Image (tube, rainbow, N blue to C red; front, side):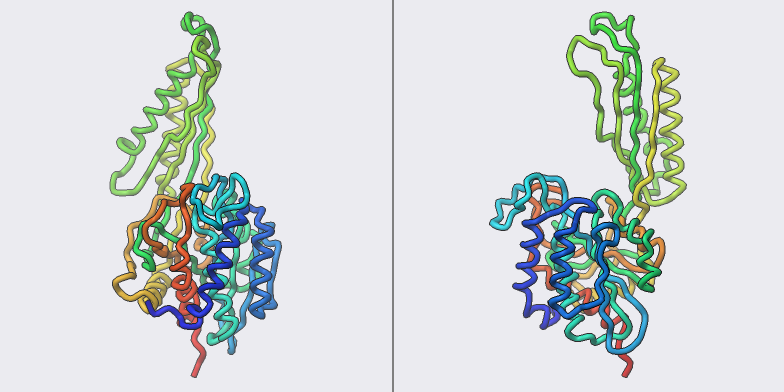
Length: 388
C-alpha cells in the first residue's frame, strides 16, 4: 500500500498512542483525560490553535496551510464502551468495566497521525479542522458539537470520517454515495395490569400475555405494513416481567430498536407501534403506555464528496482494496448530524480478521493505522492543493 512515507516513519509512535488510549478508556461525554492526551500530542506537533471543552470534552484544532483557502473537517470519535475487556492483551484496559470495543482509540490515533504529518508539511491551502468528538456511542456528541456551532464558528465547509471494520480485508477503504448507515429509533412499552395469585388468574389482569402478544404483533410491521424494497429493522430486544413463580405481576415491559433510512418509514413505524399498543390495551384490558424516541438520523454521504474520497482511497489502497459501492449498514452513527449540515463522506477501514464491534474480545489492528492517517493526509492535500 502506498502509505505516506513520513507517516510510515512514525508508525511505532502511533502504536504507542493507540495503546495508551486503549488502556485508559472513558465513556460518553466524560473524555477529559483522552482530550488532554490529544491536546498534548497536538501541542508537540506545533499546533497552537486548539479549542477545548466543546460538548464538554470535545476538541477542535486548526492547522493552516501555506496559502488561504476553505476549511475541511476531519472527525474522530474518542469514547469507549461499558464492557469488561477480554482480549488478554498486555495493554488491556486498566479501567474495570470499560474498554475500547469499537475502535475509537484507533480513530483518534489515525487523526493524530494525519495531524502530525499535516502540521509538519502544510502542503495544502486553506485550513484543516481536526474534530475529536466525545459520546458517539451514547449521547450524540456529534449533535451537541453541531448544536454548539463548530461548523459555523470554524467555517467548516466539508467533513470526513473513518471507522474501522473488523472482518473486512486489512487496509480496505469502502464507502457508498447516499445512505450508508441507518437512522436509529427506540421504543419502550409499559404494560400495566393487576397483580394476583398465580393460581387464580381470573382475579387478576395479567400483563404478560399482553406484552407477549404486543411483541408478536410488532413482527408484522416489517412483513405486512412496510414496502419490502426499503430497508427496515424492528427488533424487540427486551422483555421484563415478574419476580416469582406463584405471583401474577402487575406490569411488564417491552423495549427495542428500529432502524431505517427514510422519514416516512419512521413515521409509519411510530404510528403502527402506537396503534398496536392501543389495540392490545383494549383487547387484554390493560393499560399500555408507549414511548417512541427518534435517535440518530441516517448517515447520508454526499455524492460529490464520496466520489472524491473514493479516488483518494484508490491512491492510498489501490483498486483491489477500494470499494466505492459498499452495502449500507443498519447500524447508526452520530456523524449523521455533521452530514445533515454540510457535505462530506463517511468511510470504513478494514482491519482484517478479529472479533466484531462491541465484543469484549475486540481490538483495533495497529497495522492499518498508517493507512487511515495517510488517507486523511492525502484527502486534505488533494481537496485543497496549493496553487502553482
